[in-house]
Amino acid sequence: MTTLVPSGAESISAPVHVSGPDAPWHRVREAMDRHGNAVVHTTWGEWLTAAVAEPALRPLLGRDWQRYRRTADPTVRYRFVASRLATKYTAAAALNTDPVELDLAYKIGGRPYLRGLDQIDVSLTHTDDLIAVGVSRDGRIGVDAEPADRPMSYDLLSGHVLTPAERADLDDLDDAARTAAMLRVWTLKEAYTKALGQGLRLGFTEFGFGVDSGDLLAPDGSPAARGEWSFATHRVLGRYILSVARHDAGLDASRDTAARTMLDEGFMGAVTELLD
Picture 1 (tube, one colour):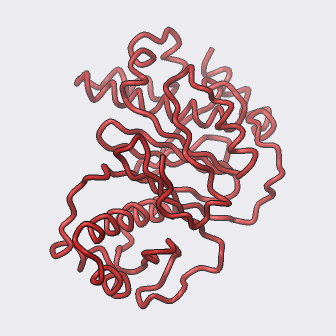
Picture 2: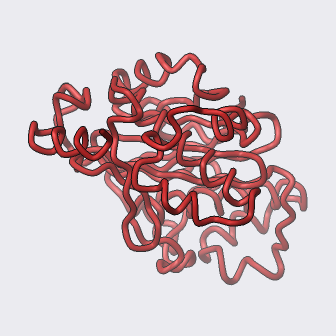
């Protein structure tokens, strides 16, 4: 794993590779304790056994069980299960609880969240055989990934994706470096808009990133944040670019984020009753 954009490295945890339900999940909890956030990456294949043979699949999926049962295409059904299990196991490890105790729900647009845990933010992305999940306890988080060899036409896309300041920086690069920089900027913008909950509704030419620093910039290249946002990009599994955007909302970082501490007793009782 190679870090490509070090900006914010002190406040964003390095991605942890997990290989299914039996992975060393304590590393995720340690990242949460140290940074207030955790990021994991995995592959569909590493969840195959859990997706097809897990005896507790129904309580693990919770409200997603009916959607799983209604999905006719076996490949789509398997990928749906794998992404939900990866999300639940990641959040459970970060919150020091059992995955079955968490109630995963979705906002308009499909962004996942944990019912009863408003302080915890969750982001999910997948591309090809990669799944990545980000969890934060002290602000918004967004993750996005792309294959590192994804072709990107500078001539066709630059006017729709890049700010004038970014285009000026990339114009000075050779073709290979320009393609790599453009892909990095693309994933950073995706991660940032996901963290904001805007998706593609926020035009990519309305904000930019320093090609060398990874800092958030206005279209003219001037600073657009005062340290509340941090960003990082990593190469994972040797073939993917994974970017993370993290917002510091100034919340109490020392607060105990074990799920049973944060959930009120009434909500915990309702979840338990639902799963019985």
